[in-house]
Amino acid sequence: MSTKLFVGSLPSSFNNEKLKQTFEKHGAVLTAKVMMDHTSKKSRGFGFVEMENTSDAYEAVKALNDLNIEGKSIIVNETR
Image 1 (cartoon, rainbow, N blue to C red):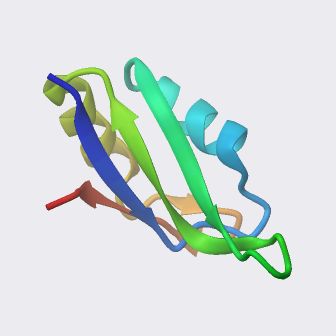
Image 2 (image 1 turned 30 degrees about the vertical axis):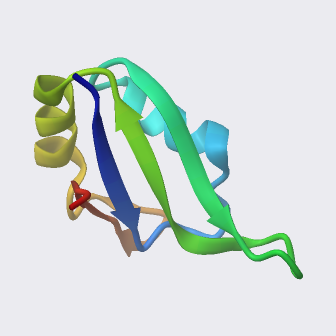
C-alpha cells in the first residue's frame, strides 16, 4: 500500500526530479511533485511524494524531516 508524504520548506531550486532523487535513497518513489506557481513557474516551496510502501515512507520521514538542504530545514510528514 502506497503512502503519500507532504514535503515543506523546499529550496526554490527544487524540481520534481530533485525531489524524487532525495527520497529514492529511502525507498521506491511512485511520484514526486513540487508545486509550482502558475505565473512565475517557480517552486511554491512544497510538494508531495508517494512512496511505494509504508515502511519506506516511515524511513524517509525519520531520515529527512528537519534535514538542512541548501540552508533550509525541510518538513516531511504523512499526509492526512
